[in-house]
Length: 209
Image 1: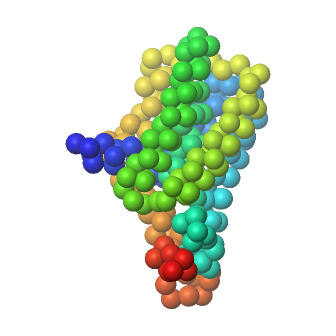
Image 2: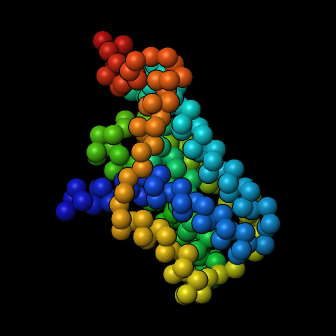
């Protein structure tokens, strides 16, 4: 039961769930928000998170750029992407709530990525420095987006609209299929760097010895 819960939590940061959800959110933000530029701001925030995470991973796997002292091989993608998406998602869905209710919803949005980060540590996929860096990156981008929307008027969702908005994320959660992002970045890193094998954490940690 414990490990099943951990794997469910970590899936809240998987690209297979987050990328389609982010695309749906762009449409919903344009529909429900008075700021017509908000979908562009959202796309910029989410794509920036993905680009920075990817660049950090390619830099390490292709060229060994990391920190042995910090045990850092790049931003935790699950943590960074979830920290970018979930605060905005909960803000978006809380339009009909009172100010205190919306604040609580956004707080839950900030708590989900923390749990995702903890799950990555429990599963031993990342170091503490990578998870913390992912949280800082994602929370910076999601907070910047939310600050940009502080004067915007957000419409609420009816029960039917809410079900439609959540249909794709719930279907993806129930399916549980994992993204192949890490494999793709490994292949890309090897090709860019012109090496036979990507750098690994073990290679990095040898430098501390």
